[in-house]
Length: 279
Image (cartoon, rainbow, N blue to C red; front, side):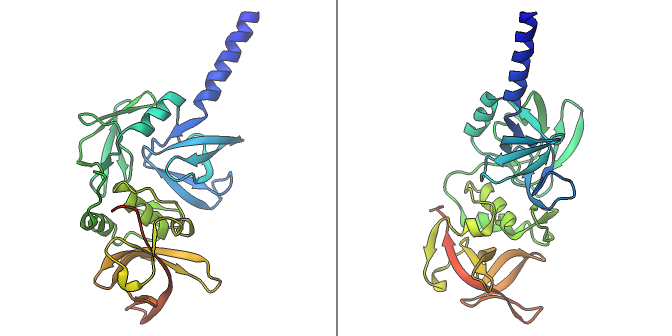
């Protein structure tokens, strides 16, 4: 009887260990503000992104993203648990991302295809095969690995591939992105980790004092009447900014802020210019 109890205790311990870490094995996982499918979606996890599970509430997990420590609730049916050793292994692997806008990966356990967005983690892929959590995936598309030195022209091209993506609060995929999600994914693909929200992204990097100092790839932040940072975009050169507002698009930018030609007015007031640590 004692041995049986010990066996049960060890099984529970193993389940607890397995539940401490996880990985997104779907196209995206919605991260919500509360433990309900009706709750506001505040973020998304992309395929291959890992996280720590910090609490359990009924059929929901409270998770903390490995990328930016962002916390929220996910449905406990929508992820793959990882043991700590594999979680740590995945974190040490060189970064690798799909190169295309829409990419297909095959779950070899089921034989079924799945779309994965740019910014999905393919770290550890070898000869087109990716393995984690006891599952195997096959990817036939092109991949991109950051070299450590950021090519700003390449970063700008990555941003442009999201043009016309609709604005979607909490979104980080080509099917919908908010302003900071768009910026975060673009920079992630080029090996630069950014915080999730614009107000926290504004705390990173080097502050530029003059608008005339802004260059391609710099981040531009905008505030509201209360002085709160509420928007971010990427300097696109030639007096233009690329940002997600309604959709991902170009607008004119000067020292006052963003000027939208269609609406014939300034839509965002410039507050801050930041250069991330890519040089």
